[in-house]
Length: 480
Image 1: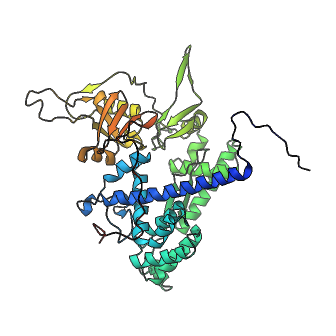
Image 2 (image 1 turned 180 degrees about the horizontal axis):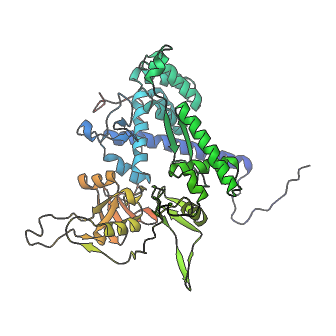
């Protein structure tokens, strides 16, 4: 038996009944969907206002491990100026990459998936579902022609966008086959096709890190190498158990693979704790991976006490002290403890070049690229002179307007460094590590160690949005 408790509403509590409350939730969701559709429309209009001067200044996505770049929308969609995405991202409170993706989705839908585009603005398909379809058609491999994209559009629109990821993948695969877009596959030849394709690879999924500090890897190797690896892992796992390890077989095999990666020999395991060989020579440092971990520490007499948690620069993630100890205590890891850098002490250097001691200070102070909403780690960023360094000032006897001084230096990723150099974006350092950016249209943002805050907007509010243009407009700069 289920008893319903009668609870008196608190003073000032919402007095809506269940039916009215559900109706209110539904209306808010409809308003949210309409707002998302409006944002897509406005993003497309923003792109219309910013055609690139040439194909070399068009926005695109870099592909990790490849020299080529991917367009932000498929063939037939207009090109967009590279730097216009930053201002759109800033007003939306998202990264420049996310803004680039938003514009790409809007252009893909408007120009290559017009049926789905119209359904979004008619309220029959939510924007998030349409964007998921656009993401697949943009990055299809091989690329979908306009005719192929129109076929996908017709199939998806017929079911009002209600299609899952697996169904969409099958539809795109059918489209590629129907329109004969795939290149010949040498492996399809049963006689000698397999000789043309080398399936060997080793992939480490380091972007998907488990909370326990582990990553997943997969590989395809020669049969002989695979059998040798299996034998080596089995031998090392048994050795670890003989040395007293209480871990499971899988854990010992995983640990053995790490030992192999650090080029240890089986003899090293039996000589655990030895740092030199039989001839007295120091054994080589095993690990070659560099991690930057930051922990708070206090002194208690002569003892240094570290905090239980710290920050790992690589991946901008939390790291546990016990976890770090296990890494450092294994396989002769080389540990370098650097002295604490007082970030409140300003440093300067003559000339334009930035020495390492100043660069380290800037990296530790800024932590990430200081452009609004950007999160790229500072250690991989450029160090920019906030006020431009004048290379002719010394020769002409003028004071240097942009000295190499920590209060005139900031970490900027390569894209936002180029943006600051070649566009109307400007910024100032108002306090150590605190920056105020001004966009080309007058929007201002404060960036500090805690993140980004939008300052006073240049206008009191957005204008009313007119009816969306359902048909594709004249393309100002077609993709070839």
